[in-house]
Length: 62
Image (cartoon, rainbow, N blue to C red; front, top):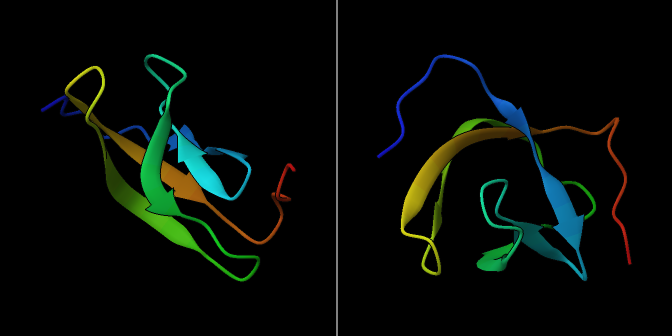
C-alpha cells in the first residue's frame, strides 16, 4: 500500500474511478453526488492503493 498524507485528485471516466498510477479503470463507481476525502483507491491491475479525493467541484467526465 502506498502511504502518503497527500491526496491525489480523482479522475472519473464513464462513471468509474481511474487509477492515478496506471490510468486503468477501477471497479469503484462514482455518482454525481459522490464526495470522497482520503479514500484508499485500490487498483487490481497495478496492485497499488492510492489516497484520492473527489468533491462536488469536480465534474463527471463521460
